[in-house]
Amino acid sequence: MHIFPIHVYEVYNKEGEQFFVKFNFRTEQGLFNLTNAQAAAIGVDDPDYYNRDLYNAIAAGNYPSWKLELDILAKDELNKLDYDPFDVTRLWRRGTYRTVTVGRLVFNRLVDNNFKDNEQSAFSPENLVPGILGPADVVFKARKVFYPDTQNYRVGVNHANVKINAPLYDKTYNRDGMPPVLDNMKDAPNYYPNSFNGPMPYVDENRPTERLLILHRNAIDLQPIAEFYNEIVDTDAHRQRIVANLAGMLVQVPLDVEKKALRLLTMVDIDLGRQVRAALIAARAVVPEERLNQLTQCIANANQKALLKNVKNRYT
Image (cartoon, rainbow, N blue to C red):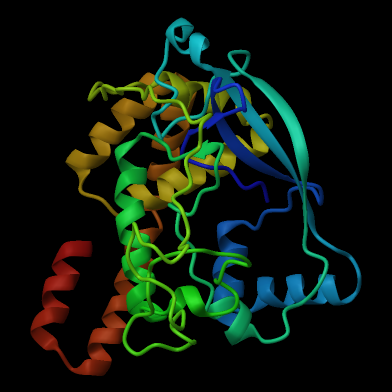
């Protein structure tokens, strides 16, 4: 599958020029998706399906790979857009940006130990290199706090000293947590400034000093959804799966919520709203009886007569 971001990263070059990019990993294997029915069956019968598929492919030398592309907007192009490029819920409109290929991601070997190399890995979106600034949206600002906090709880306060997470070369005044697990920086100074030739702060002379102020809107923008349904989704088969997925979720909600959802979907695309409405009618002709039978059996097994009466009243 493709791997897309939700954030727009600000990047800059050695001249200090600012650009705004999305990092996209596009699969070189092709797209092969499961239907909901297939996914449900595999989830019950073979929950390790994808893990085994990836493991066997790498072991056999069929290395999975992705092409890394950057979607780029220059700073002076932002004022020419008629949409919000920093909205994490939308895709950029085709024709308003340029795309360049910068490299490939290839899974060419298996880890030595799954616990040591996979389960103990602790990622954080605030771990950025010079030249890449963090996105300005509020979702990213929250993730900068939540991710390290989660890793402290999950792996421990010394997770940065675990080999898979440790930098290859570092100079810092941050001592180990409790308890120290390495040499705790021996007798190096733990304050700055000092007279013991301690590390100096890194100053990036090319880093832009001007940051954007993003004003977020609360208005409902249906245009990106319409573009996705009519342009990015390029086959009728995929559109039918979208319809089926929407109907499968809406069949569970109260009727007043369903009406509001159908109204929005019809505003996005008349055909989309019509097809979802038809799919809901078809689903409701079957689902209540099946759900009633399943719930009746479960409740009967638990001998809950009062609850059984309430369930029958709801579905009949």
